[in-house]
Length: 406
Image (cartoon, rainbow, N blue to C red; front, side):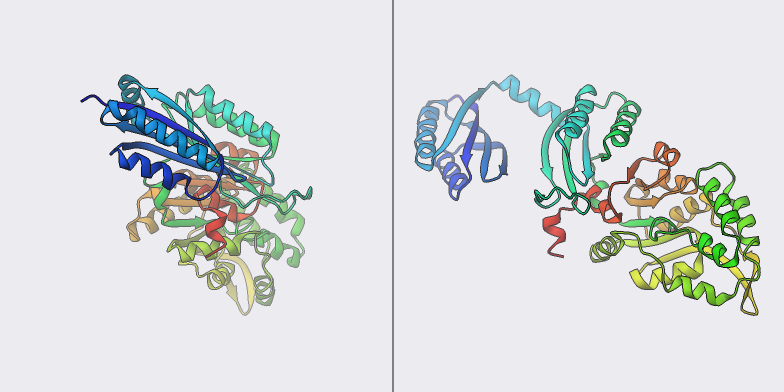
């Protein structure tokens, strides 16, 4: 008794009973389902089965029954024989690398998608599936508050990751779309710790600049801050210089700023989802512990490491206490927290915007440069610039249909 493999493709209006009816026929003849896939776009169904018919003499009856059932259901069907060699080649390809490409922006255009898929094809990789992670977009032309995200499942042996990353960065810059490229493995589906920078990441300001404005040295401090963020001067040296300029500022000013911190767009949504999903959350900041504690209380953050300003008689002395939390220290702290929580580095996410965040961004399994300077983007694994912090959820594979019900 010989067997054969047949690919069955069904297309037409999506309606109840299609899948149930076809599988019932296949079950009647004891066919084995080798693969199955289904997609629905605007009530249009695309359903495929790859089946092994154990007795080839029954294949004619099976195909006839399926053909009549599809006619009854008002859908179209196509049958394609698959040789055993073709099937074996297909099975062998499953051992190749698997990756996930995520496109995120206010709107996804055909041009953007063409550029991204072309870049993938140029690396001799194939797209296995495409799905939309965001809700159905409105036809309203005001895209400012809209968001659109598409995720591609990609398979193949990556020829040159640096070339692909560079190409994605070019597309991202030219077309105003975020593109994430990640290895699709167990770690991506099981992230457990996320570490945030604070200033210009969790909040929309650099607190030291706010303090400097109150002290009347805003322009001077802001120039030092911007130079440090661009990586032009050493962070520790810039920190000492800026803190010294705050000497004499009243502690009440810190309290006023802390109580009115401008929270980054999407932060509340992101934190709520992360907490519900059991993530450990850390703030690793080159800013100040005083403000980190306010955010810790608001978001339920597990760890806060930042710099401690010295206060005497209710005023800043222009000095700090303990070691400076610079880029190197952030990476050390990330590693330490992961060890304490017994979490692999591949399960850690790091998010920041400045050059001093790069060590932890590159140490974490998923490092995201958030609304960062070009130099930081160029040296980070991933970047997010088109929407708020909750865009990180799409990089993790979350879908709006799930998030809206949390």
